[in-house]
Image (cartoon, rainbow, N blue to C red; front, top):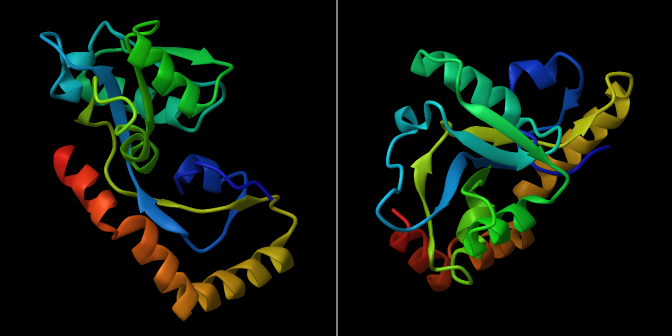
Length: 175
């Protein structure tokens, strides 16, 4: 089983089993605030975006390049975590990166010099992925995830991390 930033996309579903979604997220462009802030993904033509090596975001950026009508949005795969890419962007070592919005929102308080307003994708279900040969295990995880999501404990954790005053304040500041 792999737990991480895995959007439930058609490409990934062709090769892996997906559990029930554990949350809904989207991908955002992380860049430094200033005069040259991109406010629309259409402005990414002839630009380079840094992503985690072998990230599922790579396919989204290639699709975005075709949607924009150009094949010139370059992807620079890095052997860093999404958190490290955010820090490299904050320090100016790289121009911009693409990460999940929840992660970007959680880190923006420590890096107020960053802008995370430019959306790169629509909302996407995030799930855990398993080998296509583990259907029984996937079914067991699905039952467990559904059970957990209906529990009081889950609601308390969700409120604590996604509906707290601090989280709402950060989310409002970044709209």
